[in-house]
Image (tube, rainbow, N blue to C red; front, side, top):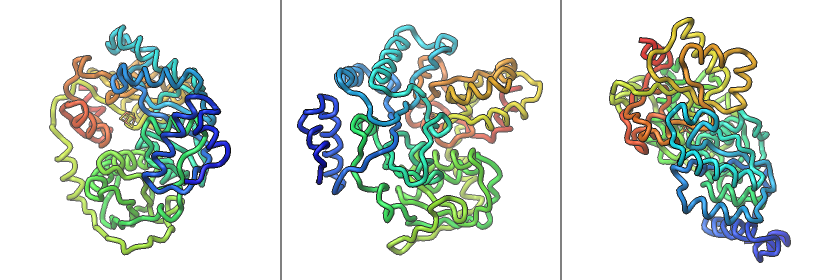
Length: 395
Ligand code: F3S
């Protein structure tokens, strides 16, 4: 693999310990995937923030890197295991909170912005079309590739951090235009996709069946940002899909595939089956909206549907602090909190220690949220449309 003079220096440790470790990680990755060189990046998004996932070994590794490691590009952080301000309100222990703050302080010392959100593109880290980036949050990766047209592989926490510390990433996979074309075509001519819930179920089905292939959706007439977010998150979680195209609507749908393309038709009954597959129909301890973290528009949608009613069940909406600030300015945040909804920043029920908070079942409109609640956190799940969740919360 070709390395520039500066990259050689990093590799030899002439630019410090952290850059040396980081470059070793990137070169090893590049060699595995056949990269010829490194490519400079514009930004990074680093996952591996919750103490629940990192543990003591993770803290130790980060502490070592932070001795002299400073990031070279604009870098943001994925959600942590708690809301940094309201952690007591949701029952997080003192011990967990202390460890969690320690992790965030280490990342901050390295120059990383503690945005603590899986929607960095709604919180100031918004790349442009064609930008090379190194992001490690599957729902953000698929959004950046598909909707924005930026270029990133599905990085893990360590490789995204290594890219941030060196300002580079190996040039392979989705950094190369030819690899970004679709390899299956999904026809949806008779589907009535009404909202983000339907798009999430569609993403669940194609993710489950496409084995990581990049799909081109044909027959979708219009789609909004909330729906794109839901579709991508579901595709990325059930199938590890890194990118999708929608005919006529996403920026690179015209890229021509090299090989023969398989075609599949999706009908209404496929979505109904997906809903059944994802549903335990359990009475929820928690109603959760915001996977990926909600936009201002989604908060307004909830408020409109709630009207003057108060919620009678525990209900969380997870957002970035940037979106919370916007909602506060407009009075939307205050109105939702007055009605009993908890707006949480910095976290979500998937990365927070929810089982120790006594939560055993969850209802959500997100296929990703349902999938991980069941498969990572062993919760019973119920997936419903936003309107039905609000009815459930108010009765
Ligand atoms: Fe974000 Fe948590 Fe969902 S990190 S994408 S809200 S699982």
